[in-house]
Length: 287
Image (cartoon, rainbow, N blue to C red; front, top):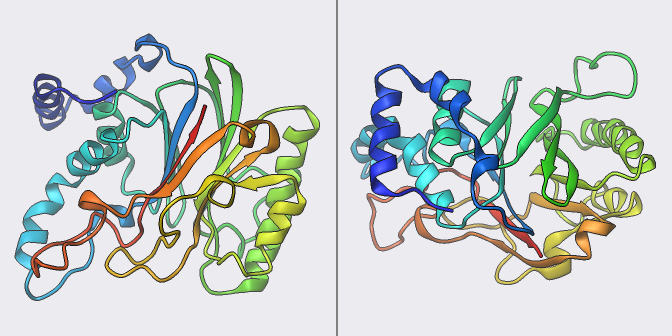
């Protein structure tokens, strides 16, 4: 799946004319050519600000910011995703522009750092900050935590997206506890689960083995190739972005890699270059 030039110009013109919301709701990804398998990407997009602002590139970056939705859509389209999750999403209007350009439906999860699920499949339902019981504690899920059920050719898939607390391990641990409770409900019902996002912990952190103990499989650990680090996009030195899957889906993973390429990274030979975000997206392919 890609974006031909005629469609790109048409959609860009309609968005500029104020018809974006109507276009988004008129798009029917389910009518595109069916294909089996799943290509999924998780990406912290830094609210479409671009990275890293420097004295050399600040004027170029300022001109590019109004184009960021189109730039991100085009770069993602090169990898033919069936599903994309964003962390640190911009406004819903700008997310809708990307979804339209990718011919996808979307669910938007509001928060101080909003989240997004976009997919070429039908979204049957979505919930912002799902909990087994009670309401969100004020200090938990201050970024975003969302759930959606999508209808694929092979059946329903439950997709979770999250952006966990960046600074406090004890807060993340409590977030993990609540998240695992919600996931367990779907697991007990025999549903297939995909979970991805910016989890703000490294593989050697205390949170990582808890996902494993819950029966989730780290796609990069299973079939990763290339370097695993996901931040920063200038000189990556940490791995904190993940794609996890329940065992039934994970058994079909054929590839996982960090997309340290193209516009997702900077060009060290060009001091005016910038990346689309401070994070690097992660791609997983399930056959």
